[in-house]
Length: 147
Image (cartoon, rainbow, N blue to C red; front, side):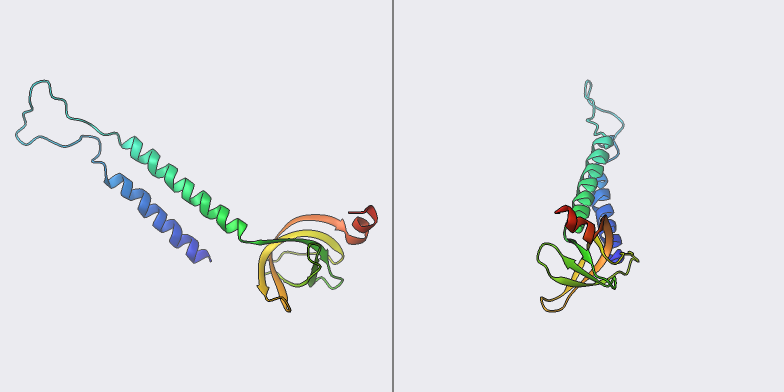
């Protein structure tokens, strides 16, 4: 995943730099014999426009990719099982096995909002948790409050 990210950023940098190649550094071309027609001023191009355009385009692309990456993750709210390795979703009452490569620590019996990657099918669901979004406290406490 990290390799993909760096490959994408490299392509982004190359595309941004190609915008600079379209402009000749601001002189707009030279003269061949050292003389120009009287009253003629060669047109100059500002390289600032290319820089601003390249940076804005690169930032928009990077922001879009980060947003896409963040939204493709599953977000679940539910109660952590007594052994700390399962999560029962409130939305669909399905039980997920919990794994965490990033070391997210979930307390047994807590109502939590987590995000991660869903793994498996309907009969054998698992969730690789990468982020604890919110800890709402004890599941029993939330049930007694009517939430």
